[in-house]
Image 1 (cartoon, rainbow, N blue to C red):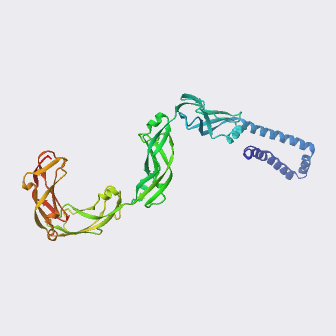
Image 2 (image 1 turned 90 degrees about the horizontal axis):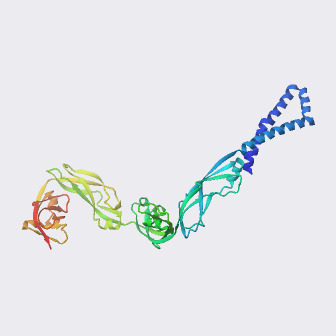
Length: 448
């Protein structure tokens, strides 16, 4: 009612006041001021009953015309569109599945402004489609909008649709967990495990819909974990979604639709040494006498399986052509699978000295990567042992023995027969260059 007064009555009153009452009042005051005694006579004239009667009649005619024009203008037919009205479907949800209905419709109301104003105040947020009497199959149904104002015409867009009704079937599927926002976790944390009461979930829908479902996932949002610390956290009402082979959500009923999941965060770590590895060769008249670093050990964080196979962190420095002592500032690269490091860079100092050589004899050759079911045999004694030349600082190489040197041949991919294989040597001290005096050996590979 308040809106009706504000929208209709008040504008009319303001119009009469502005266009009729105020001008007449100003006219009377002006005449009274200008003509003095004549103005007083005019004022007496206005106070006579007959004069007032004529003035009242004149004002009544003016007011009628104004109001009549306002009403005619207000009662002209117009239209209003009610957008995005939801559809309420009536059917047996336990027994059937319905496809083909749009999510929302638009409703166009046609009528006078007054009727439209009233109709909009009582408009429903949805339209109803009654399918309760229909059986499985294809049906064309009308979408109708119920309203109490008979003076309003309405049109629904779309006004009719073709729907398909299916028998509802159900299946039990296995649930898996999908972790969302894993990158938001602290780098030192991992999701150690997820626990929930049951992994058997029922899905309901048409037979065709159920055939599309390839997996059920509980979507665990790690942003919902209240703390960034190791421990077990209960996440309630985790939503479950059904997906097809393309990763698209399949519109089926999932029972239950949510599940409670306990998420355990852990922070596995391991302290291992830092191994400085020179790359290249220093200038010919020099050798590396010492290598020192600001840190010798580092703590790595990551999956337990990755950490168990990790025995050191390699740090490479380029010494190729080096002729003087040098200090390096080196960024430590994270090995694959490692999430975080306790330190990210170190300082490495390299000192140079004079060059000496040393020969170590009778270093046994070890075969590696021999195929399954095969055996290898050296064709001569020289194919089983080699001599190795050490090149480096005198104080460094003096302490190296045959036990510190490894010679090997890589047999990966080789089959039965005789082969010439390159000999490779390595040592425990990276400051020394190791060279096999025998470059290749001949071996025979046969079946066991």
